[in-house]
Image (tube, rainbow, N blue to C red; front, side):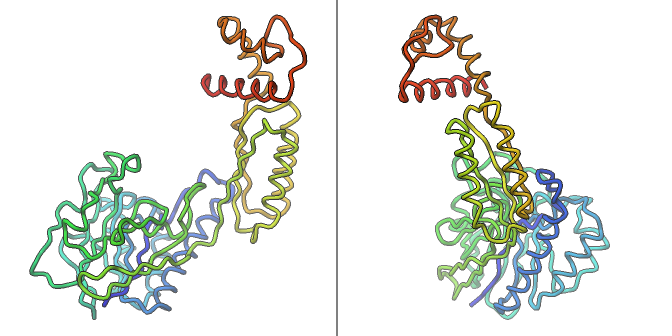
Length: 375
């Protein structure tokens, strides 16, 4: 029997330039989430903590931060196994070669080799695949073999992207989908993807311990992994570790800015802990001149309610600009001109009767389609 807590992608020292005004608070939350990982490991009485890469944002973070991270890891009552990932790769100038890192306690173990590493007081070993560069086209698990004479629970630890179509890049350390079967593993602990993802029961991304940006579904977690014996299916239990909430709202200004702003206010009214919530408001559709003041009012009022961050991303197109472009295109296209003539509006030479709601909606859809193609 072996029980480990699988975590990864701490990226301590994250620049967080996308939320620059609150970057310090974001970094502080990442350090607190790291403490929660270790506290969870202690309370769950696991046999070890496995950190599957990218513990640091890069190899250039300050020594002060290295000392802070080492202090957090020192609080663990069990061994902590740290794999170099692509952000903190085992290069000649690696953070793991610094004096500040070498001052870590003995139970914090760097997985910098290829040999199996036993987990004390268990019948389990770790098979590490440390990275030695930022990008690579080679499968980091390719060197593992199914050793028939190794009668132990085998846990692989790697950092890269599973070869799932449209979810990996060729230079992103692509990992074969059959890595578990090929290497005779009981479990493959992965890092690199920030959302928790479990593949066929034995391969898993635990997710970043704290969300790093908007749109990272499944982050802010770790995985408690329990394997009863060699060959047994792992029992995987998600553990919440993050504290910040990253929420996105999309406003379609074609529906009317007043209506969309009211909807946004309603959606965020009951969100708990605004002081720990980062909001991204993204606009789409076509907008009127007066919409900007409504949006500024929304942004100001949300900041007044104590949200940690409120960002407005304008992806809408001014209605006048869209209509002007549509008129330009109609002038050179008899088909488009004829269609607009049926729908009515300023882009046609001969105005028709006032369009009804269906005509207005169709014209609006056509305008937005043209703008999307134009962009």
